[in-house]
Length: 500
Image 1 (cartoon, helix red, strand yellow):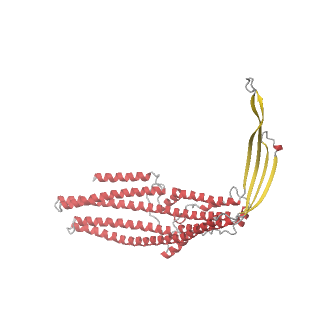
Image 2 (cartoon, rainbow, N blue to C red):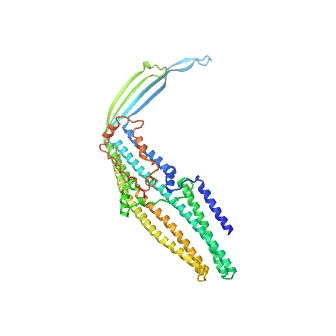
Image 3 (cartoon, one colour):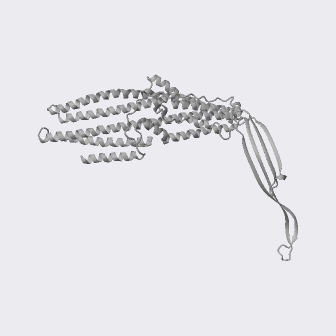
């Protein structure tokens, strides 16, 4: 028996060490854990960085409306050798004239420097399509960020309730061991006075050994849950308070949940923005058939490179206004148009696919929630009845109406009922979080309203006017966008007040 208890302690210490690798305990409530994960979870941080990188694609697309300026400097060395006439010259001093060919050598250094300028005036909608597509991609990226946030917060909730469930399971298993140890002592005492047989003692010993084994498994599972908590939250859990109710965020019925999910689910919204992006790229492919208008100029100098005498260099200034009209591309433009049209068709179909997936997820999570709620009611009634049955069985054993096995069975049924009760409460909370995730409401703004919220639009607004922006860019952009569809941002659901 002592060996069993030492093994339990070793497992507990091992679990605490594994979870303690993440840092000291601090989070005491679910709101604390969510706030900490929201600020420090690496998966969420990486997705935010990816979104900021995606914002740059919008800036890069807009550079098609901006001028380009380049400076070119060249220094050229040229050596030319021209063969001359033949002659007899004693070149080695032996007194015999040698035949040689005279060659004239000319060396020349030239240099030039120039400043070139190019400004697109009209691209036929090519740049406008790229800008619209990039903007729709940014909006889709924000929805993917919302989806990742919901996944991370869902992991926090699951880890939190797992720790609380397993902690309670350890308590129940430990209480079961304590009761069975007392039962074994009592059986031995009654065997010594001849009231029961050795079989009764053996039954008590077997149940105690099984209970100790179950306790070790419960302690190990608790350690695993604590390690999972530390991985997703960032630190070891302390004494966790009861999780707050989610009733204020849940819909009154499944139909209202469907309505919210169809307008607020990030997966569905991301598919809609992806379709807008591909629609803009169809316009970009069609724009390849339209003319382009641009303005270019050059200001430069050229002259002798060595020695440099800039006062003798020639100066040149040129300005060009050009129109480029595509006439024949071998079918390339037509092929690209057909390609983009089919991609847009696929994206429109993906919207329906995403909608069905969202409705399926909503249906599954809602029915799991209903089943868990019904299971809570049943398990509470089961625990109430099992407590009465266990107490009555012990009393009836004292007067000889029940055997030791009856008492052991009653105790086992009580512990199983208690475990079923905590599992039902755990499953109900996880199912409620799943419903919120399907609706698009599993967000920090709803779960921890006091926590400062990360707004991906803040970085995007900073990039609208950056280095390289020119005042006439907006006018060129409006002209270029006349034939290009613009992405339409649909406002997401605002913060929902939690349950009072």
